[in-house]
Image (cartoon, rainbow, N blue to C red; front, side):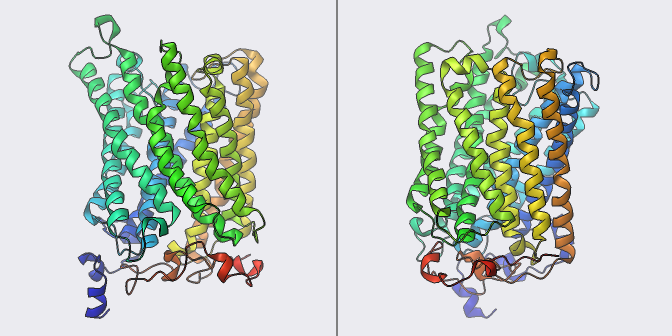
Length: 554
């Protein structure tokens, strides 16, 4: 690069000019390149996803029969506690926010890196020790109070395991806050000239809303964990009802963060879907501003819905009505996104490749999760299905059917950009079919189980629930098997896949204007906006659908 080019990139960090790729070794270093950090997040969180998946399979093996004939009830409690914690705090949030957020945001806005590269690296390197600390609690008495860790149960179970859980969540929360501050500053201050807020890609809007939620909500969770730690270590009585404490206060503090955390997981996935569908439908996104502003509306409204988790906790009737209404209202901006995605697909030159299949799967499953969410927002119905498997089904349709399907779609879409290699499309489609069938076979019967009254978080249940539980367990095995073609495809393609062109999908956002994979500094010169990121109607009308696949059919 010439001196003039360096001066032109005003937001070029010093390390970017001198960064020299050291191959795979750079992923094990304190690297400040946002792309390396993004892949570090993705690979690390996926490894934790595999651990959480193994725990889920053990849980479903136990639940295949009514009796505790596989694991003892205490160990069952430990399994589902770590499963829920790992899947939420070590897989979905780090992968969506840290992984794709880090990799894509600077590229999408034409920046050379994140605003605070060293802070960015520090945020990632808090993840592995936090995860290993949580998993190591198995050797000292794992936490048994569920991923919510409600007192007084959390104060009477394994104290050492509970402290391991608290320290791990605390580290993960600090990492999230550091990352959110970085995203907030990067998006607002480092866009290229000419890219106003209403010109930036929708994924950036989603990340902006997500960052606000993390900054507002995570300190509240931290305060709850600090008070719980005092109860455990110093015999204070913040949440001990026998000594004048209030355990319901913990629920308020926990859910003030943890329901917005649902959108911390879902908003990045929605942003990625908003980028992927227009590319593979070859149509401009329908309702750009409606989608962008709905992300901000979701962030705002999600702060006022937390107590719908507490309708059976002695909440006054007038307060129940308020939170019932706000919970139903938040479905409106979500519905705006869904209708915009469907309108974008309608009449498009749709190519049902792996990325779009998972994107459409995301939309369909998220709709089902949203419908059951509106049902549980109604106080009478929520009281009926509270703490039953209906809630388990709803949670997984929103978070696995939503977030995880969105992550898979994004991996297939941006894999060529990240690795410079093409994946095998046939294996990608097999992965989708197995995942979609396995997921629905696992979780759809849980709606019926919940309405019938089967409680969640128990290892033993009435034999009348056995047939549907066996069906769910068979689906869980299929869901576990579905991960194998994905692993084989991604690992083999990364090592020996066909070379990817710089822009195999003929997309219009800025990340596709640089090489695949991008150089350490992203762009030789500061890029210039020449078209809308979704302006396919004006530029690609004569492009055949078959030419858009860009994948090897080996």
